[in-house]
Image (cartoon, rainbow, N blue to C red; front, side, top):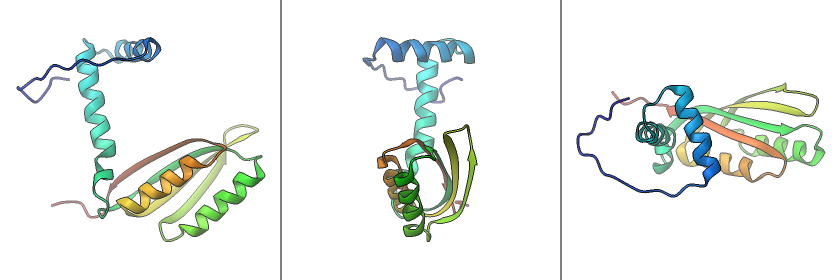
Length: 143
């Protein structure tokens, strides 16, 4: 993907070999011609995904996906408590099994950027949760 900005700045970064190797494999798989193209695309994606974190009062709607071990009794109790404490933000919760030990749970959420960020951080801090991912959009799109 060509860069939209004619004013290019060169940067240098240090990466662990394993991380760079994985990045190079993905670049090749996706057909990038250079690391620079891949890094520009990755930064654009990162900005798009995380820009909302900078404005704490922006109304947002979204999805939080959680993967966890459902045999962990204390974790299940804590997740129920988290859902209850954040019932003003969580509108729906759907759960399904991945395998004999793990479950994926999808939370439909609506609230301010700050409320959603706080909920995600609480979930990420819970021991036993393998993954937490959030995708959001503005609840009141700009004209």
